[in-house]
Length: 455
Image 1 (tube, helix red, strand yellow):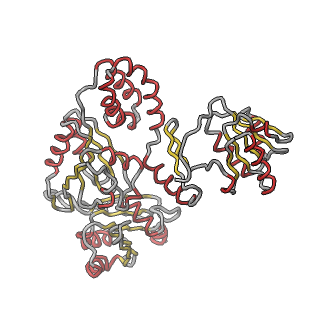
Image 2 (tube, rainbow, N blue to C red; image 1 turned 90 degrees about the vertical axis):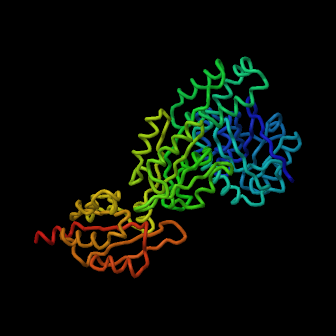
Image 3 (cartoon, one colour; image 1 turned 180 degrees about the horizontal axis):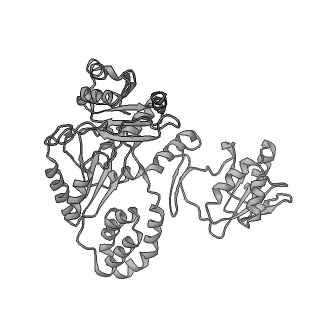
């Protein structure tokens, strides 16, 4: 390493920023995240910097800059925009041994500002020694997705309770206690948004000891396939899970986001058949949670859309196990995005219907087009095998046979296929294209058709 990463205390310390324009303002924005006393040294300040001074958050030094300006400062940033001026100010700062960062002059920098992920008091800094700032920003964006938005306040709560833990819990047990806090039920409870309950749980454990481990279940939407379409919460639950029960349509790259030591159990649901029946899946996830494990039931798309979420919710609740739903991007939304269009369009389609072409084996086939009327878009899930029936039903309702039907298969995955055909050729087109299994059929019946019919 040519630079050693270190955090610098700013409480009750001065930070000098030389310059009155945009580059100085960029450093000021960064330092406003700290509690440092800011000194803005420049004859004149732009409107943003003047506004910072007006709020009392910084003071303006408009006179000559001397070594005394930098004396006792924690650090200085020099950003006047004039190379000669920057170099002379750098020399003045070095005279009093003030660490300095000169913008766009790495050869004059004692300090290099990293890319920062701020979850105060939790802070992650990424540096490349000035060699690849774009890479640092990209890594920062990735880390932003991994850290929950509320993890900072949770860390702050732990800090406030450290003295109480030290007073009440023997030293040999403290590591296990904090491991339970940060990887067990308190953190999971906090991240669900029930912060008072999490706080009460920790305080009770301080007074009475860690309770018997209670498991939990998260019904997580894996989205349409691509792992970068997962929600941040879905990623967090995967990384916290002890065991993951996943479906056939879940992409392997999504599973790679889980902890390496998390158990993975394939439950193989697909249209019309199941490697494991639904009631058995319910029993498996409940049994794992009863063992004190954090369970993720990972479903493609959104768990609440044709994902049998009610059956698994009911099983968890009947067993008294905490359960949550983590929504995901549903296939209809991903299909429309891949096609470069909306699911609704003003003046064309103001109603969206999500329907399934296939039901349970022992149930009658659903009438998935019963809501088809002018001004409606219908997204049919699991409809490929029923294409002939769907085509006949739409024609019977009056949809012109020449209407274009859009088909999206394996959306957002490497094997993604987007195609279209007229309604009258839907079943033959699917057969000729070799599209089977999971695909979305998008049927839009424009409002204009209603107007033409009226005429």
